[in-house]
Length: 283
Image 1 (cartoon, rainbow, N blue to C red):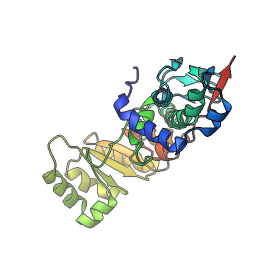
Image 2 (image 1 turned 30 degrees about the vertical axis):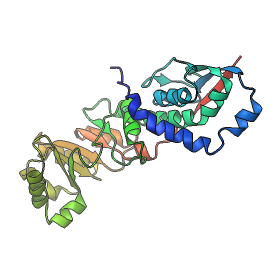
Image 3 (image 1 turned 45 degrees about the horizontal axis):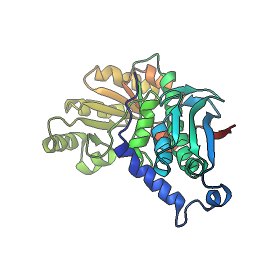
Image 4 (image 1 turned 135 degrees about the vertical axis):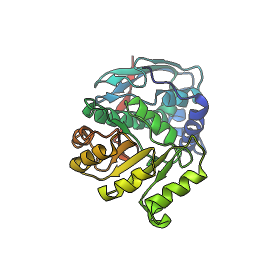
């Protein structure tokens, strides 16, 4: 299924802010002093390593905000797999605009492609199970929408986008409210009928109390595969089951094989390494 693009209206503020940060008070003094006005160039975005592409619309907008006449042709769209040496896109036109926008374009593209690539590795590792890999709210401030888009590009799913779109009752909520029962009861009394409730537990002794309150999902935090298997069997389809903690390509298969519906990993958005992508000039 083709990945739906993000509206330009969402992308532009982040890209514009990045360009303004880079241009500073005097613009690109290096390019403007070295490159003659009117000089034309043709370049290509080239993958230096294998991965999954995400963020091309951010890169394209970075250049088009500087010069709308630049010709940008996408060869491998967001969600596409790339190998080292693959040409992802070509850009032709003003050499000054190309060079001035290069770093902002590559920052977005490499960062988001890194998230997509890391997500794809986990998604592939658990593809033989029913589980889906999801992100969390551990995102770069101001870039959550973009980083969650990159997770989708890598074949993952999104958890809640913010504090306002779902109830997630965690250990500190429970501690202050007094109990799981009290926390869920108070939450349900305060929300609308379309808002889902998830509650976090960190041991199996809490499971019966949680299930008695009929939450939509139960977050099983930092449990071993054996504990997860027991929890899933006890839940028996009465709520969605989500596993979190210690998720990587090595641990994810056993966690998914325990039968959980979802696996969440915060590092996908806050710590995934970039995908190395370069800008190569063409004759």
